[in-house]
Image 1: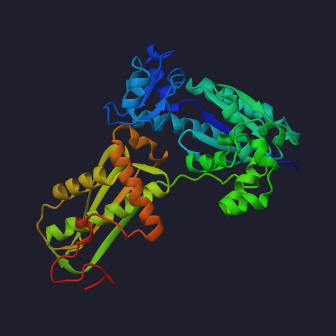
Image 2 (image 1 turned 90 degrees about the vertical axis):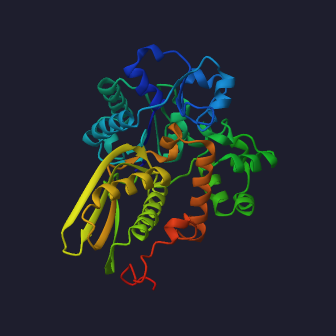
Length: 394
């Protein structure tokens, strides 16, 4: 049985949501992101793209390319709300779907063609989403995730496309190698240095040569270029929260050490968020005193996964919560109201330097372990004269 995989992508999602509340933005070059010159473009309209602007571009450069562009700071909550609405519509109508990001979905319609026709089903789903949200949406249908994702890019803006079984390789052949998922800037430059600009050239290359040049990634890229992708649609389940807590061997009132511990705990949770491409909108701090009475305090915040934002909120909540001045037995942190969306959300407010710093820190942690780099305060989190962790160091 041939697979039927649909890839759905919301066109310029952040911009499209802004246009729902402000129709004056329709037809205009719009940039969503940090409003200062040191900010970054998180999303841009197709009108802005015609000036050479793209996401993750420094806002200062985008202003220079298109001085008349309208810059919007963005509303994290609204984007999440519309993403949830679309997720609910899809979950009601399809047997199996995956949500790799806030504005992107894969749907497995395999076996449904004998009833209605998968392309018709996908068309009706697209119409339903647009009817219920007012948002433009594009999709492509093929036998696998790679070809469908590339097809959606070719169907944009606000279009749809079917790549029938057996035509995958021919469809991909005339396209740029940049269209292949996994081909980033470095891989693109490497392949261009080899004289490869179009997918059809890659298709004709021996797979062994790609293995020699790029290792196992070379094999995967070669297979994708030839329209071969057996990866499954992974059933979607949204994780609602992540948390951590520490119980002390001896109760303490060492506030400085407790705050340092909270910083270290927060850093580990935020790294976990970024590793899973998630963001949080609710922070909770928990304290259990030596008499076993437990208290919590929480606060809603704009969606983020950045250490300095969350550390400030965690320590502020701790200061408000810790009023009894009693010995503490346990402290904990929980991040909830999680959404998928990746680091692009933080582009609304963070500078390029901050983004590069977090990316560098995460790269070190992934290579050498999550404890390989942290703030000095987060490393020195032991209250004086006692072991703060069960099984911790003395």
